[in-house]
Each structure stands twice: as structure tokens, then as C-alpha cells.
Image 1 (cartoon, rainbow, N blue to C red):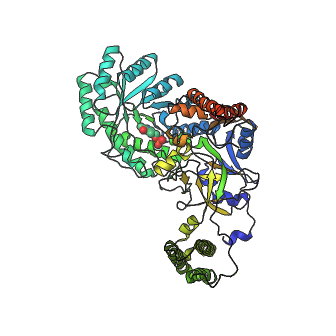
Image 2 (tube, rainbow, N blue to C red):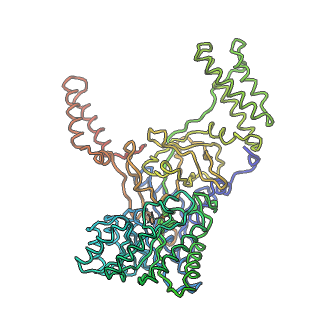
Length: 638
Ligand SMILES: *Cc1c(COP(=O)(O)O)cnc(C)c1O
């Protein structure tokens, strides 16, 4: 370790090490006691609670790790932040239109999340974006404010359109966004059949491309939206049908997590040109929908790196309002209502996945003899000699030599020239040399370019009680990075470097890339486990996309979920507690019938009784264990 070794470690060191104040957005911080705190805004100031206290309370109520905690306050605050930021930008610049955000249901469809968004959003006229029939049904059943928009994207069949049209008649503001030219005839036909005029939007493909992970959503070859040539055809069809007065909205979506503000400005600018020409064609318009893309700073670096963003929320809003005004004003075009479909930025902060550590594998050398017997192979003596000669100036050379000797000894073993004990001695010596090199290199990191790799090779594996595929699918699917940190003991120096493995038996079920201010780290500093004390790790900013994209790999089901509201005075209450899937639940998802399975197992047990392998009372015990397992949690229970 470095020079800090001699100083006492404080919670502030941990805050810096894990970047908590950088990605925490004011919601997460560290207490002097070394626990992660969650901060909600109360009427008379900030309200803070400790995540460790929360875990203890959850466990006392009989729920086990892993658990997903949703903080209702943080969701409410994000909705407020977004609306206030747009409203401020509108006020300060004298913009004549309004802001009407919509939350895309696909980003988190969970009932309690949508209910909270609808309830908190009502005062801002915040609406929902629906990409399918079930999502439209969710929107209709949750939105009451007549100001709130429902934006329907995605493929729409006649049934979808009928429902939306009838909702329009009731007073909902439902926009049908045309994604492909074939949708318009269905909308026109259903509208005539029901005698209800639709609110039509068109999603256009912009030429503007964006950086970041989702840049395939933008440009000519993006899957959704109509080309400019198709747009003109649609306008002509609407004119010919006498329905151009139904064209009210222009939509585009450049992709999620846009890290660079310049790309956002370029997109709005191009869209404004399209918008103005649609007005000039005679469409009433009135709504400009910029889609999603507002990014989350997952690594806290505030850069245009894929997991970050180089702009604040206020800058995002001010830039959008500014580009629209400066483009439309010289052309005397009225300011439209601005819609954005921010999903990720709205919900990411509100959920934290908590899990405990079950076990640790460390790569420590076994005990070594004081002296190596002269009878051992010369290469083994050479390895041992490296322990004496290694220093800061010959790190690379020693590293290469150690690898060479180890590999040679493995070859000799294969050919039967070195026996199992000598092979074991050589592996232990090799690890010992690598550890020596690591210590030397940590003190002089510039001298040795292989340091990150060495650190990774010698790092511990912390086996943790969760499934990556169920709870953090984007880490597996798209190399997403989420901030990860222990939620306690942050006033102690973390002395281990580790990667995290989940409990699926899949070698992809691991986390070995971690958020860092400068670039991604391959290992995470963690504390050594204490006897008889749980060690809890939090994965933060997981509220967007993770909950329903997850799958049942190895039949690990949904985790327990707890919704927490922090009240005035800093107390919290559990608003909802949802038990995760039982084993019977996940078995029925893959078409098993738990009752039939139990009957079948009982018959097999009865056979064993008849054949004298177990007694009747042993059969009772076995059946009890079987049905207790069926009812149990799919994760590791203590
Ligand atoms: C997924 C999606 C969004 C949400 O994007 P975020 O980056 O999460 O804000 C918005 N609009 C459309 C059309 C989408 O497909």
C-alpha cells in the first residue's frame, strides 16, 4: 500500500475511495461512523438515515438478503428536480411554451414506482410514455391529471388504437406517435370507424448521431422512426384525407445515456428545423418531444465518458430551451410545449440492491519451507531467488522470470519430471513472488505497467448472495457500470482488493469492472470479513431497466423488495414489503406444478419406506424438508 498506511483511516477516506460524493448526487454520503447515509429533502432541512440501520430493521422483520430497497423520497425528488429545472429554464429565458415530461413505463414498470410517479407528477402534469398495450393500460389506470400527456410509441394495432381513441374522448391526452408509415392507415381507419379525431405525432429519424453506448438508436439506420422522405409522404396523405389538423407532435429519440451535451444540442437543432417546416406545411403542431437520453453520472467523473455525462440537469434544460428559442424566434414560429421522455435519470437513484458476502476465496501462498532442499529442481531454486532479488527497479524483469519458471515447471510436471509435491511448492513460491512484486509496485506504480493486471490476478473473490442475471442484467449484457460499496465499516481501511462473484454457477456471474473517477478499475477495495458479522455491500443507482430485464438463470427469482419513505424527523417507514419469489413460484414460471412434484416425491419416499431404506417417521421429516424448501427463498438463507 502507499504512504497513507501511516495515517489513521477515516470515513472521509472511504468517501473519496469509493467516489460516494461524486456519484451520490447529494442522496448518498458517509457518516463519521462509517455507514452509508441516504439523504432526503425534508421541509426544514435534510433528513438522513443509515443504510445499516435499515438492513437491521429489514432483517428483524424476517426478510433476508438480497433485498432491493426503493426510496420513495428519491423518486419524488427526481421528478421534482426535473420539472423544476425545466420550469426555471423556461421562466428565466422567457420561453412561451410549457414543459410536460413523460416517464417511459418500460424503464421501470413496477406498480409502486408508477403509482408514485403519477402521484408526485400530478402537480407538474407529468405523464407516461407507453410502448405497448399493457403499458397504455398502466398509463390509463394511473394518470388523472388532464394536463398529463400519454405518448404512445411502438407498434400499434387496431386494438391499441381503439383504446387510445376512446381514452381521448374521455379527456385523456393520448398521442399516437407514428413509427412506420404503415401505421397511419390503421389510425385513420379506426378514427373514422369510431368517429374520434386522433392526436397524431410522428417519430422522425434525425441525421444527428450521438456518442455513448446507444448510438445505434440515432442516424439513418436506426430501427424506429420515419425518414424525411417518408415524413413528407405522411404529410401529403394527411392533407389528402383532410386530417392534417390532427398532426400535433414531432418526436425523436437519439438513444439512452447521451454523455455529451453537444449531441443533445445538435439533435434539438435539427428537430427544430423539421418542426418549423411541419408548421409551414399547415400542421397545427404544438408539441416537440425530445425523447430520452438524459444521462446518469454512474462513475461520478462528470465527463463525456459512456458511464458519465458532461452536463448538469440545469444545463440540459437551459440548452434545450435556448436552442428552440433561438431557432424558432427569427422565423416567428410559436414556442411548442416541450416533452422529454427521461426514464433513466428519473428512477436510477431511487433503488439500491443490498446483498451479503457468503465466502471469500483468496490467492495466498501456502506455507513455505525455510530452506529449499538441494534435491529440488533448479528452476524452483530460481523462483525462490527472485524473492531476494526483486526491487522497484527490476519489477518487469522479475515478473517475466517468475512466469517463465512457473510455466516451465508446469511443463516438467506434465512430462513426469517434477512430482506433485514439487509442483505444489513451485505454485506457492510463484504466488509469494507475485505478492512481493505487488507490494513493491503499489509503492512505485509508475515503474510497472502490469500493475492493474497483477492486482486483478491476485485479487480475492468475494462470493455474494445475489444473481447478476436477475438483479443487475445490464452488467452482464452491456458492461454497464454501477457504483458499488460496502454500506458500513467505512471508517476502517479496506485492505483487500476483490472482484465480486454471484451465486449462479455461471462464470459470467461476476463483477470485475468498477466505477472510478479516472478510468474503470478491475478490482474493488473491500474489508476482511469478521467472524460472526455480516458484511453488506450496496449496488447503487439500479432503479432503471434492471428489474424486469432480469431473468431466472439458475432459477434465482425476484429478490425481496422494500419501499421506504423517510418522514419529517428522519424516521422511516416501510411502505411496501414484497417478498421475493419462493422456489414454488420460480418452478411454476418454467411450467412445473409444485403440487404434482410434491406428490411424486412422496410416492418415491413411500417406496423407500416399503423397501426398508427409511422409516415412516423419517419419511415425515423428509417431506417436511421438501415442502419447507418449496416455500423458501431462492437465495442463500442462513
Ligand atoms: C427507452 C426510451 C426512452 C427512455 O430513455 P432514457 O435514456 O432512459 O431516458 C425514451 N423514449 C423512447 C422512445 C425510448 O425507447
